[in-house]
Length: 406
Ligand SMILES: Cc1cc2nc3c(=O)[nH]c(=O)nc-3n(C[C@H](O)[C@H](O)[C@H](O)COP(=O)(O)OP(=O)(O)OC[C@H]3O[C@@H](n4cnc5c(N)ncnc54)[C@H](O)[C@@H]3O)c2cc1C
Image (tube, rainbow, N blue to C red; front, side, top):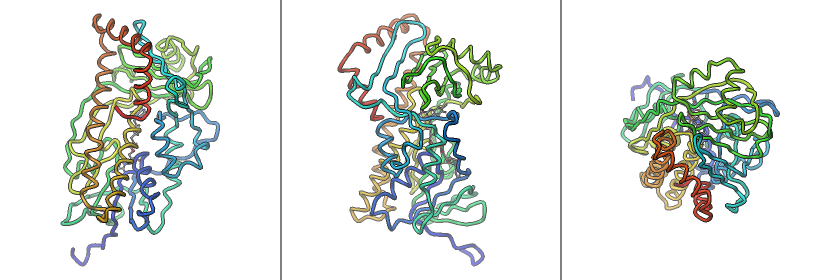
């Protein structure tokens, strides 16, 4: 280093991206007594979200959290604020095929659990996670702050921020989402599949109560989900559509859109009224070829993106974070340094295969329900009905899905 270059601030770990997964990962790690000596830097390009008014309708992005994700978040420090996050536990899930008789009803009661999962507004969860990320001697938060270069040196990585500061650490955790620039800088390739679909999202009110039920109708154009918010007559919509159709629905006059939505949903909850804006997101499945390389570790959407039809995306990310934290802590207890490769490899082995399986299952479901081949239509309708009456098998699958495990 020449005399003119600034001295980097030295850390054990740099986490790039403090979205839901990155911030939860940092908080979970810091819950462990052995992490007290750990020096972490968090670099996030965005401003923290502004908390919404207490009884405002939910924002556009929501997550269906599995019981395992709920536990992970509560253990990471959100337990005491949980009720302020307006959680909406759902006890039933009804799934049916648009052009047939196939139906499946999952029930928490039948599965012997309290609820199937919890719906939560992303912005509320993100705000709560951010509030816990308070800087102290072990934690430096650089936000909002972009970075301009990431360079591999002999024993560590050096990250240069847009304000000229330089940070260095032997381990970089990339939690910077599906377009991860850290992944790119580390030269990790991704296998990508474009569904040529978009997920149209909005919040609506409806005539009938949702009865704490997550509803999903499979149309040949893609699934349409009504997800119950904490208001008995308001739901969050995720409507998967071919890209051009999603754009057209996004631009429809409000009344026409409301009618199209209610009709696509077979008026199960009566008439619907749009609350706020509509937006749509391109749907891609992607998987990084490696989850770790030379001290860069990918978690959450930086490692994988998945079709939202099973609402698993962020749950897989929280499972990644939990597995990485567990491997790092075990390594430290074994007397190895935080930067040793063992934990990174262990994490990658634990998560990559599992996430691949989940992604292929979701792609398969999407293709099966999109098919108009008569034989496949009969098969899926019969299959759904048989499955609905399969008692123990259905109960077992529901319990497995609740753990977010394929
Ligand atoms: C339509 C739709 C509906 C969905 N519904 C569900 C659902 O019901 N349930 C579910 O589990 N999942 C759902 N998902 C998926 C879920 O939203 C994602 O899996 C989840 O948000 C990923 O979280 P993340 O923290 O890994 O990434 P992100 O949420 O993308 O966060 C990345 C963070 O990194 C920051 N960042 C990015 N680049 C940089 C940079 N260069 N420098 C610094 N910071 C940076 C960003 O500002 C952001 O804060 C849905 C997805 C879509 C598209």
